[in-house]
Image (cartoon, rainbow, N blue to C red; front, side):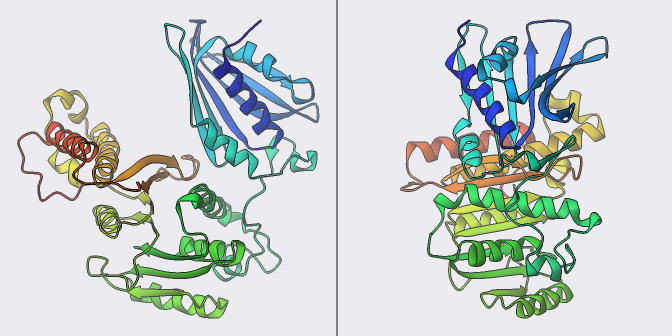
Length: 398
């Protein structure tokens, strides 16, 4: 039987990601079988051998399983199984992609190149990397790095402490996101700012990656208001010999770098601090912006949209809506300022709900007077007007 090229493409990526032990899951939705809700494909050990296991969720709340031994699996076999679904979301370590099939029979795969690059960047294929139903991923960091020991993530033998496993995965995932953005950054020396850096796990990780792993000259500043944290981080940087890394106790509103950064990062800057980070980075024309927001309050206090009142009248749903809408407005604003934007998952939402990273790449030769810029600005303004009604939004931070 013949299958469309996009279905074969996503089937091939599922097979390859499973072979490299990088498959997190493939979520298959919009099934032709109306008794089904969805199917989730994961990598398992069946009878001591790796296999893809499809868990089929039925509308009667039952679940059934179908196993595909990896040793005899082909992309055609996978495509035959997937042909009954109109949407497939493939989630791998380091990248995601999506297959869609329209009612008219047109198909597309979105972000498949990103998955291909992530898969090409690892050589983890040995069977020893797969034990039971656990995948042992080949991380960028392995736990032996001195900064991980100094920050209390790993012990002297390079073993990551049990209570720090989530933090270790978060740090590695963050570095994978940086690696995906390397083609947008300088290749010999780099200037980095971490705004609202806090305990600075990511500051140390980013500095280590560019200076030790990539062998680049790095100048990096972390900025935070907590003097004790800044003092501690400067002490750690000195102990590690990270001469190009400094920490500054200052309000980010008042901070002005001596050299404009190519990369601005920020992890869990509270409420409007995220908006200040994004605005400063855009004003500096930073090449790459990576920011994971924390809490959101401003829109929740100001939303006034009759069309969404069926949601906003419920406080919990109102907050969830405002969280998503605030991040969408932030991205729309960055687009109006000349950035290509997207959201990526920083870490499994089961480990932290604050797992959405806003990613922005500065467009080359962008003109604020262009039709593209004007259209993006209008879209941003209209979105705020839709959400906030007749309120004056000029003083809002999002």
